[in-house]
Image 1 (tube, one colour):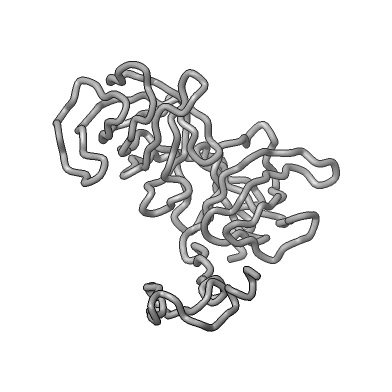
Image 2 (spheres, rainbow, N blue to C red):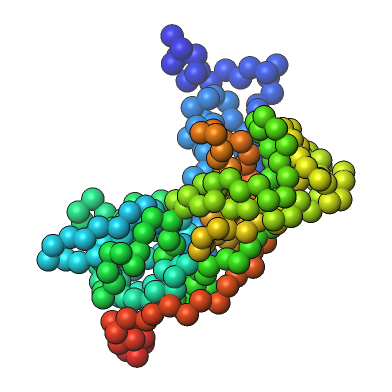
Length: 265
């Protein structure tokens, strides 16, 4: 009965056809199925540089070191020379696999394992970010500016507060070094410059400093690496987006495999 009603071509809304406005042009539909059939799939961020946060690293006998993670932006291919932030280790990708099948390339959304040459398992860990060494390689951040919305904190948050941040696969304590401005969470207008503290319901711009080497990006450039949750007392007390990052220049080791691959190219 419901299907018949949905498939029926009789227009409701007083004879008017509902409209959907979108970038590629407006679309009129008559039934729910029309609307569902014409949903545009989201575009994958293939044009951006590679960013692949590591979820885990394995040592597999006869193969070697295999980091595992999901491609967030860009493309990962065998033969590519990748840099792991924040340590700056650079090496060549031997092969890329998904569900035990070799891939010629991995695109955003793919959960993959990739074999890297001459890198020990202890040199890589969860929270590191793999990137293309030739195209805007990811780097360790010295500090970053973020817009933070306090959701549920029993007290007041002041400068010096050091909760744990969950950003992509990283789980690292970061210090609220400076509360720069308190803003209206809806309009973004400044309410108070240099506030002494913020509490539940407030939104503010904060300068944050990681307690350990960490790789994050601005939300505008790489959205999956630019949003985070603030965890404290076993609950999420705030959420935020990263506006700007100050990168640190770290010179990590470049493996022999990477040097050979770079010479070939």
